[in-house]
Length: 176
Ligand code: IMP
Image 1 (spheres, rainbow, N blue to C red):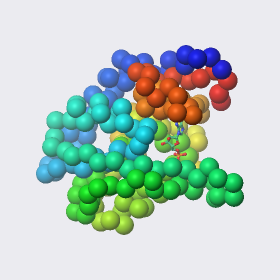
Image 2: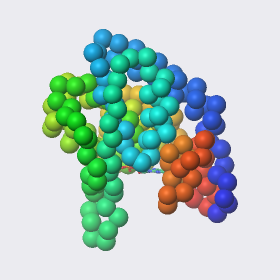
Image 3: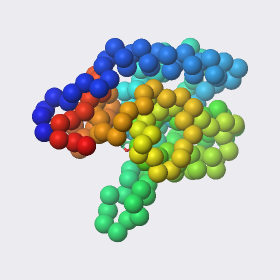
């Protein structure tokens, strides 16, 4: 495996698309008093930081961390909450900001959990999606990029905690 990932989505492409997404979101929530953004840690931290600065509507930010059970004997796709929100989302307009949607298991789990807290509305924004990998169908209202089935890193995304801080999204040699 080489050390420098091959560029799949460049810094310029990311900047342009994140600005477009922020415009779409600002337009979509123009009539709402305040938008409540929920970033999924760790992967969404860079995307959310850029997105939030490009929004032109009033919004607040909170975070959730989830982790997949990688343990022997655990149900495949099982997800666990490791950090919860600090604030209530009851009667608030919530937009979940996810780095990448792969099988959809993580987002499906999260949406079910958040819906039970009675937000005024609940929508999703994913920077990257891999539609061919989907196991659980999940609604995605705002999407940055659709990519084929490949492991990608950079701009918040990691491979074994490496490459998160790359300014672009790339693929690794030797990975599917
Ligand atoms: P899902 O539950 O299968 O949709 O997976 C979602 C999570 O898996 C994402 O939030 C990422 O943390 C991780 N993930 C899935 N595909 C990739 C990838 O290509 N690169 C880095 N992380 C990924």
